[in-house]
Image (cartoon, rainbow, N blue to C red; front, side):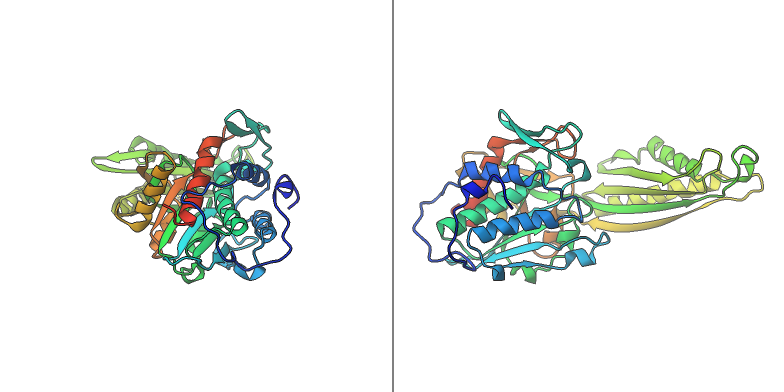
Length: 418
């Protein structure tokens, strides 16, 4: 894509499918941090909500080709065709054959942003990048992660750095249920042995585990009637939903859930229904979630939600004794996981974090990550941060120094210089 990077990217007279013969390079090679910042600044304004990632993927591919990568090393899978959302494209997968011996390494990040970031206008304010559009988030989640991967790939291509076999994967549809990583096949990724994922937070945070989640779609059906002439003949789906949510709140099964030593969360995040004030609403659709690191407790949270809605259905009747009903569609978003601290990917990540002057902090996430599905599919994956602050809000910012550290970490992990 035309833009700030064009003047910084050397023209290439030939195209190669991967880096040519390596040049000797010192351990701890430094990436071009000026170019890395320009890169993320260019990527953040590109619209790319979940399911609409094609423009972002094209921008990444264009930069790789300018650096000399041949089209035969670039492919898209069909993950979007298996997603409930559909979408414009699948995961972008790029493979480099190794120039040094070693197990294949996988570096991943997701291309999509949440809708609030569409229309962002990134600008540098001191040590942070923010959106100058007050109505939008920045999109550093996860354009910063995407740029970390791209920075490492460009450095290797342009400087012909030695490296083990590598796979770079830019996932789609992370923000709506991890669909890209869920439907990405291990064989497509080259069966990597070490895997590193970049998402939100500090570059010193080494996330080795994350919660699991169920997603619920709740269809509440009542009976319509004239709200002014004969409201008693109706069954309000809104009333049923309201009573159920209030019950969950009163009994401690909505929000932050703590029952003895068991912990989890739940949230009713979407309510849709009704078209007029003079009609008793006969249908309401809700979307909710339940999370916990404990699979059994997570299932119990779902049961409590179902029971609360069933109880509300029994309470709300018309004058003739007619009631409504409720239907649930419950699906697993992702399973929880926790890596052993001795896992090779964990040890490698900690070593690199120390090498750039930071102290690694092993962490467990209460949110879902592409690492959930990678680990579930047999690729134990560590997640590292790249400086995003307050993601999913209009106050989102990118800590520039933290992002630069993430780029250093990414290149070291890609070149196995830990």
